Image 1 (spheres, one colour):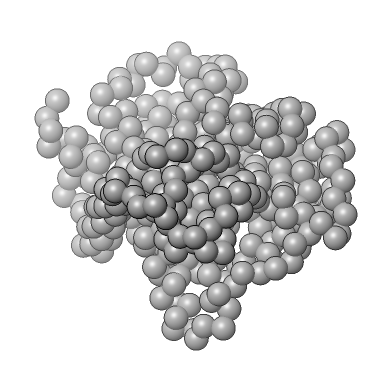
Image 2: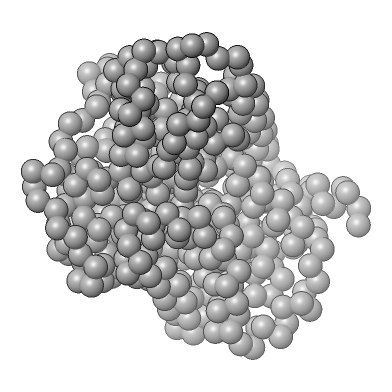
Length: 416
């Protein structure tokens, strides 16, 4: 197989996605700066349908992957949000996001982009209600912490705009960049190397194909945006739109790591309802797409034959792709520098903590923010690669561990 053909297939997929991904990053930054966690918590207490619906509606646009949303949801629950609303938030958030909705539109078309948040909202709503009925918890109003650590609340508008752009083009890229690249590479390899005949037999049995896709998707770790090019490639190879939709919904929503942590923090019953809601919703909407909606709605836009698009590289799309690649390279450099800094020799005022459940840059930021909130902490270096935090200053070790646990992570002190 010619390397040139692989390169062009990769570039064509990247060009279709990059403008929408960059737009999604900017919108994500705006949401991060202007929508505060304490505001969310005040609306997520109680087991009734209103709090569940609010949690789902809030989660739909937030650009968090399944590992990033987990500590956020656990933190919200510990601040007063109910299990019902937390479950609703957990289901809705990783399946969608402004970035993935925009990218879904770019590669899969408007119907997919509309049905995806509708399905996420439906599964989150009924999953949350089920937890509220069968696995409720008791949260009194005085348990809800209303402190809003809004350091940027009084900043001028230009400062907030800068923070939005910085978050979108640094933190968001750090969080999902690796998984986006993995998704693009897998999509390219499927497009080039997987023969169309491999999926011919499954075309006659959509339900069986959906069940197999669930078995494949649930254990994997893939973000909502990274799943899009993979779904597109599978459709190009003959799988039905409904089967591809199952991957879009089930893949980002759950993985073994998140299920294990949920089982510990939310309980077995709530975790079972969570996983069941994700699977049932994905399959039901997949069947609706394949059997009830017009097939022409789900014809892939623009990319029907990737091999005949070598000369159609628009300047704007190419510029967006180049900028996105620069952001990804910068993210990789930051990750390497952070790992190197974490290996520096420590002094007597430095303590190291091992942290479990930290899988993305959003997790790292949450841990860093929690530790910095402890009195006496002078410097924090959190490493994703080594799953630890090196903390310098005159601080209370127990308070650091308590702050990290309240943020939704397991932590233990490591002797140097």
